[in-house]
Image (cartoon, rainbow, N blue to C red; front, side):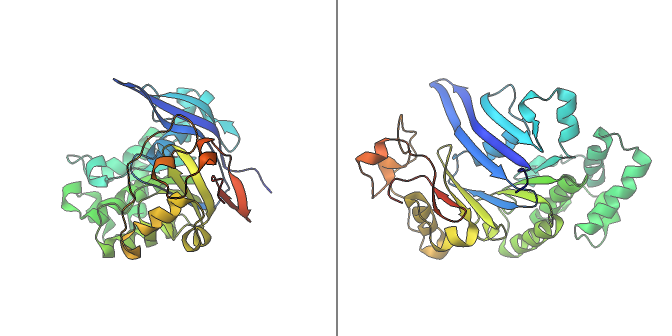
Length: 306
């Protein structure tokens, strides 16, 4: 088996607060193969976006980070600023959530996408043609008109396609999509997912999402809770036969599955399983933190009951 395109080892991220340090990621380990599509799911605050931003080292200066992140074997944590700028956009790109907020309302779409080429040294006379071509490839029927349009004149789905276009401009090997269907109507969600799936064909996709249906376009699903990975396996298997009590409760809370709320609230445990206080199946063994264990081929779970 070839080496993973992304390898994360014991990644811990803490943020200083008035009450002390808040641990957003807790010794996360994750390998992602080239061309793999991986969904990262979990409740708000579980660390999904922190994980995505950490891969690009976007949290420098506001967090304390330990552990290692390797992209194609290169240690991201030891890269210089110049190396980071070269890596971002070309090797790994991020599609931020809430594009209507991420896009500058007073700058035309074409110029905003063109800044990606500009930062990487592409002459302006060349990147305008590239931007128009990219807008056409992403599904806009009149890309020249979109190029000259301000973000506020676009729908939510069109803004999402715009930031996908921005992320894919330099054809990166890895695309991190942070909540790409958030706030969209059902028709726009389907359109955006089709676009994203088409644009990342043959490339590596990390999709951070709350959206049950969005996760289905990925062949693998990683379930996070309170900064840790609790389950990791083939999407179809994780959805059809979830093993961790949290994953089962999460599926039950989905509107399509009855919308049954998960009792209690998220609490970071000092030791043991963080889901302990909310779990109906807790026992004394859960007071110790267990390693991930294999329950079937490529399916791992962090639970003593499995």
